[in-house]
Amino acid sequence: MLHLENRVAVVFGLANKRSIAFAIAQKLHAAGCKLAVTYQNERMKLEADSLLADLPGAESFQCDVSSDAEIERLFAQLKERFGKLHVLVHSVAYAPAEDLKKDFSQTSREGFRITHDVSVYSLIAVSCAAAPLMTEGGSILTMTYYGAEKVVPHYKVMGVAKAALEATVRYLAHDLGRYNIRVNAISAGPIKTLAARGIGALGDMLKYHEERAPLHRNTEQAEVGGVAAFLASDLASGVTGEVIYVDSGYNIIGF
Image (cartoon, rainbow, N blue to C red):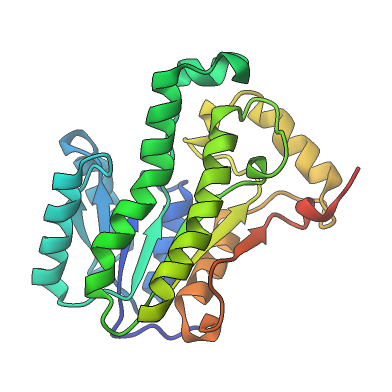
């Protein structure tokens, strides 16, 4: 069991009980973290608050990561409430549905902009806002996928955004390392979450992944949560700028 008592974590992207962010929040909570979770808008507040019953002591805050004003307000609230921050989990990604239905070459300019703003730039924005609160050092985590490296049918513009996200992890790790803040990404295998259902042929992806991965099974949310807790802990004190795969070994297979 990892011990993260007296540490404060903020988790972005905790949408429902099947979300990867929820699995990460559970592992951090079990390790002793004080938790702040965010919801996008008032409509999402009820869902977020319903999850707090499984995370005793956790608190929820509104933050739309596409709004600089809301990010600024959130971190002012976190500073007032907790004083310091040790862990930030960025499990946020979005692409307009219409751009996931077209061929990648037909991606709209606006769809490309929105996808990168929400899925990539938001990591920069929340990391910069979090850094002044990480006075004792910190760990920043984001979620990526193998579609950042290889063409995955149906992943389209999100694959390009994940490639940009992985590069962003490396550049942030370089900039924030002087403050003892580590930045890493977890590349999870396909998981049946609400967000993943927006990607076409998810069932085929899961079937193929199970057949081809060395462990011959799909990835569980809790497995991703466990690696996130490790990266949040002092056991990973020398790990930064990395993409850690939690995909049953699928990424090592050539054909």
